[in-house]
Image (cartoon, rainbow, N blue to C red; front, side):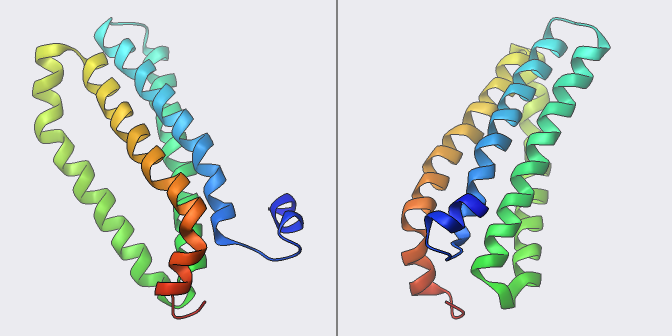
Length: 146
């Protein structure tokens, strides 16, 4: 944060928060691949724990960064931001269980979790760099607090 504030001549930009997402998505993708390989190849329980823990650390890091970014962009709507993000996370998480388990039973956990990791990484690379480039203009247009 301090480096980015100095870079912007003392001005804080909300898009600075999004740099943390790069770390989180890397952890998430690595964790899901480890978890998928551990489940499919019946590896040691430690591999399952490491994969799951790494993936959940990535989720934690990314979620905190996204919450911080959204609340910086819309400081008077923090409750609404939290509700919307939690709704999306809950609905997305529950919907995955309907197709992921049968798919993993048919094709293997590595393919299933690998495709999930690829989907997350693809969505990340479509959204986060765009927000880092155009976020200031979007905030100027849509945020009443800007």
